[in-house]
Amino acid sequence: MGVLCACACDQQLDLPQSPTKRATSAAADRPSNGITGAAGVAPESEPPERLPLPTEPQLTSFGGEGGVAGADDVGMEQKPNGGTSGAAGSRATGGAAGTDGTKPVGGVGGATTGGVGGATTGGVGGEAGSAPESGPPQLYFSEYVEGSGSFKALEIYAPTASSLEGCELQTFSNGKLEPSRLALHGSLSAGQTHVLCSSTLATAQPNACSRSTSLTFNGDDALALSCGGITLDVFGEIGVDPGESWADGATLDHTLRRRCSVTHGRATSEPFDVDAEWVTFGTDTFADLGHRDCTAPPP
Image (tube, rainbow, N blue to C red; front, side, top):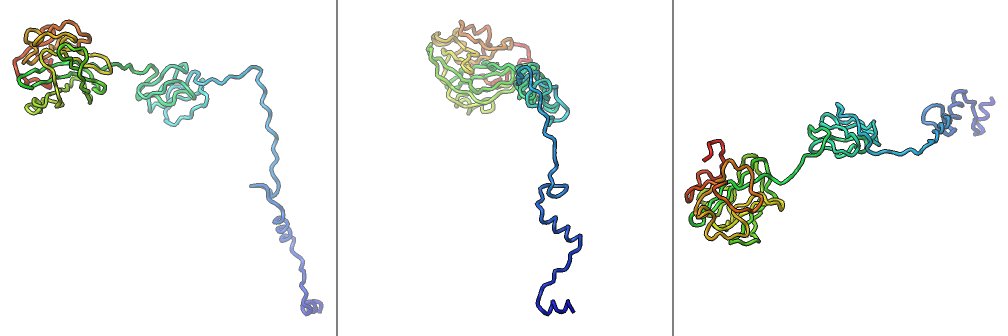
């Protein structure tokens, strides 16, 4: 009868909740601070122990002794401050550690110092040591053509692989000291030649010529091959006008080939002795132009 009265009187009854539901509701009302573990309770931790203060100043050394020589894997971890624990470049790149933090290590492309964390990468197949030396290319005149009409040519020979960039042909006309200049370009493999031809000769001998250009020398003019401001070879004598030609007509209307006993150019303008370094051939001789063959007995 009591229940019916409550419904009839339009009143809401508060029924008792079960213990499990009450616990769930209470937990939902509390704030949850922890990511894991019991809700609302953060784990307590002991404060970190203080590090002992150094009795002497501690200096950080960058470079040091470099690291251990290359490891098996490319991505070996590197220490931030070098010293004795810095890892060097891997064996995959041929690296080797610097020994004192200042000496260059590696070959081409190698790291230059032991540096932070030791050498990062070595050169291609390189070991600890200095960088390869560089200098002017080894180039010299190997054939000279002063033929009939406007047939002219100069053959440049490279005993070792050399670049022509930064090189130029200098023509000293009629004993002048200031030359006209022709910039050279390209590169040569060891034993290869680069032949400059007048346009007329390039048309007549296209297979012998590397480049068709304006060649203005005559039999009485001096020529020089210069690279990076360094004179590598001189034909004739700069500042001297010999008349019609050098060596009693040898350099006028003739082809001259460098003797095989000559292995480098004349770096200075000394008195020009044609026979000492050149063999003279007749007018318009082009058979060997573009090829320096010193396997046959010298002429």
